[in-house]
Length: 241
Image (cartoon, rainbow, N blue to C red; front, side, top):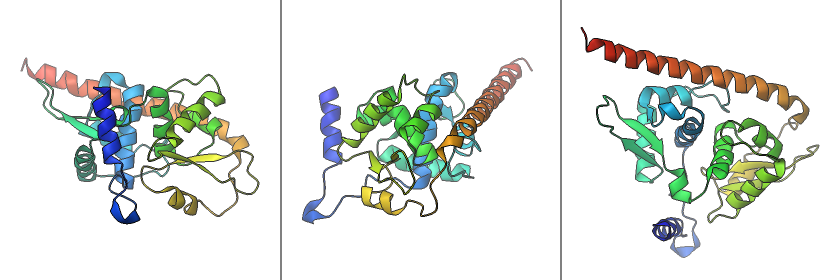
């Protein structure tokens, strides 16, 4: 089975003839947000995964742990899911007895990697370019890294894929650490060209912001769980009306 998956993945990422680069595998910004939100919630709220459309829209539009913050409609999310299904990056699940379809990602199957790599990639997809230290702090709920070195090992794995899924960006003037960006929506050259030209971020103030963001994220997850439990109880109560 793994050999078949490897062969399929290799076939899908071959360059096209004539020396031109195949861009069919690249995702747009909405696809990136939907896919990363599914990967995040699989780890943080497993009892509510696969996700309903309403829960997925809320996850995509979170105010915390998102850069940039988006305001996607249900139609935009559904259309993005349809495109991700065609690219074999997501699946629609129709569970027995369920009144609504559920959605799940297929990143782990598509790229044949484990949770540490998935956590790093999802963090970059949700929050943009980051240092290895920032990634370790921000994706703690997706995977617990014992050290920054372990994060760097996962980043190296993702950079060594073909085509690469992550790139190390050149250090900006005044920066102490290298930053990394995902390549699911652009080439390495485009990722470098898209870097902001203003002064570098102050990494010393990141820890407090990260802690606040983690708390806000937990509150958002709890609200989603309460909303889903309320909906389930309402459906259960209707059986006795």
